[in-house]
Image (cartoon, rainbow, N blue to C red; front, side):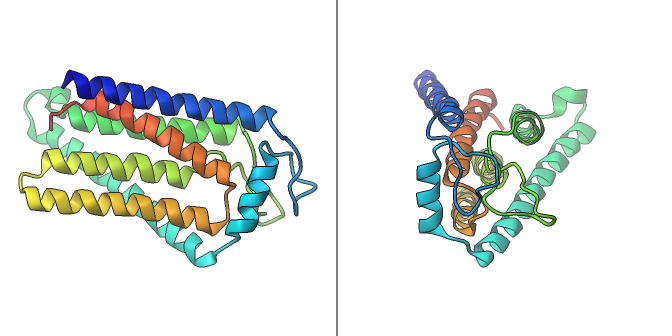
Length: 221
């Protein structure tokens, strides 16, 4: 157990470092305008992002699928809120009736929301490569959909293994959660509504958050 904890901690710190390094690079390295957005704010790692955008392009179908998968992730969040409320209502120990695992999931959700608000409202690193209505540009780093997919679906996969007594069913649910997370990652990338570094940033931060969740939740239900 101690060995697994140390490994999770190292992985989490490594990805947190990668995220911080990526943010620094976006602020300081190869900062410039990217075609066809010469009037948009400058973008870090512009050559790489421009190359990746030309390679990936834009796909409306992938965008729509990613939107649906994002809504499904929010539904999963709601389910775990319901589970916690059920434990609280049916238990006899007040807040202590809520399991450690559920508290850890809620903490992970809170981190995800805090990251979204911080990079959306407080510290905008860069903007999307597509215009919204009224020719407005929305903050895009890190991709909130990819971050949501990693934190919600993969934590749900972990919870399934601990909360479902039937091993076959637990494995099935876990695999489905992983597939949903991967599908959201791929679809959001192919949609073209984010720069490649937005996707990378979400992956780095999501894994760091997930490792923190695993350290807090432990092996208990």
